[in-house]
Amino acid sequence: MKTIAKALAGSLMASTLLAGAALAQTKEVQMLHWWTSGGEAAALNVLKGDLAKEGFAWKDVPVAGGGGDAAMTALKAMVAAGNYPTASQMLGYTVLDYAAAGVMGDLTETAKKEGWDKAVPAPLQKFSVYKGKWVAAPVNVHSVNWLWINKAVMDKIGGTEPKTFDDLIALLDKAKAAGVIPLALGGQSWQEATMFDSIVLSTGGAEFYKKAFNDLDEASLKSPTMKKAFDNLGRLKAYVDPNYSGRDWNLATAMVIKGDALVQVMGDWAKGEFVAAKKEPGKDFLCYRFPGTDGTVIYNSDMFGMFNVPADRRAAQAALATATLSKSFQSAFNVVKGSVPARTDVPDTAFDACGKKGIADLKSASEKGTLFGSLAQGYGAPPAVANAYKDVVTKFVHDQIKTSDQAVIELVKAINDAK
Ligand code: BGC
Image 1 (cartoon, rainbow, N blue to C red):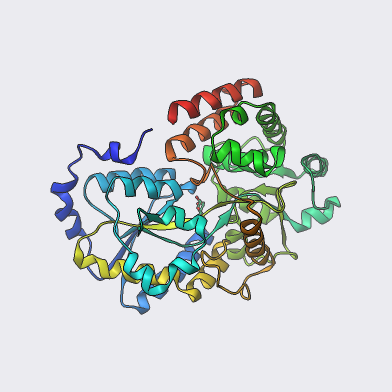
Image 2: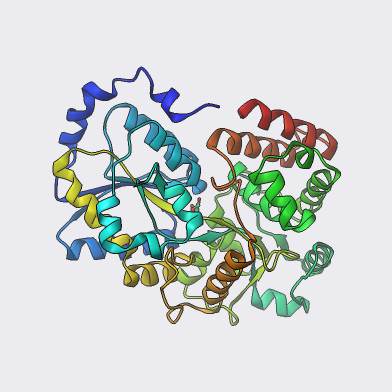
């Protein structure tokens, strides 16, 4: 397994720590993140505002690129140089990886004071607490198995909610016949894999998803069901416009917002773009679970991983942690971001219909045991495995892997090599 600890070994970390620390002021929060789209920036403004009220300045370190691949490369370089940010946006297994490398701070005192143990759901604590210490503040819970649909286009083609994968294909055919781009896709590996998470869940069901993408069970990874999931990915690709390659996710969302395309399969950060464009669910757009996946939630959660900064910067870190988990922030931020609160005790009053469904789905999936981590989004397996997965999916989408049979063979090999 390729871990962060190995990547950092031999770096100049210790000797340059002080130099790095000098770059950051004690009364500022230096935050590395990949929230650069309109909806994401609007959500981040809620946090900047809250911290400003506490007297903390904001030092932005944005690294564009949805899914955070580029941001994580930048983070690795900063940490290796001993230039720790106050915090970094991070996903699941990456937090644990940095914690194992011994570079994370300790938020336990703040967490105790604020009662995080009781308020934060157990699946999130698994990734924010390392060896009994809180090392990250969970910001939200996103889920990936959603469809985002333009309502006017849906009405025009006389479409209804697709309940099965075949229904979805029939709906896409209707859009095609009406001269609308059926499926808005951004041809980047993380987006393709995020969509494939939903396809695998829809094709194989909740238990299959868990066995394949959380337990990495080899029999499931190489099963006929996985092959069928790749077949289904191939079927969906036929509905994408020719310019999809390399397109950013928010540009794909904009195609749906404008009515140039019918639907995007994307995590609920897409809803943040609809909200930023002043669009309303039920009136301008529709949110449905990916067909055949209602009742299961494939989640990820943005966390602010907190680094082991020098003592004079820890007050800023504690202020950030307290602000992040406050109930009022959890409501105000997630309403704008498209996600749902990372605490179980935040009322859904301020959320729109999609947000209310997201909150209710999360609750019922936790109770029923159908809440699973997204492999594409850092919650199914450690980063090396997730990267191997994204690589195979994107090669399949871009015809470098030609058949579903071959894709399954490559998937098993890539995951085994990365383990
Ligand atoms: C993050 C979201 C973000 C999305 C697109 C995901 O990995 O969890 O917060 O909006 O990437 O940038």
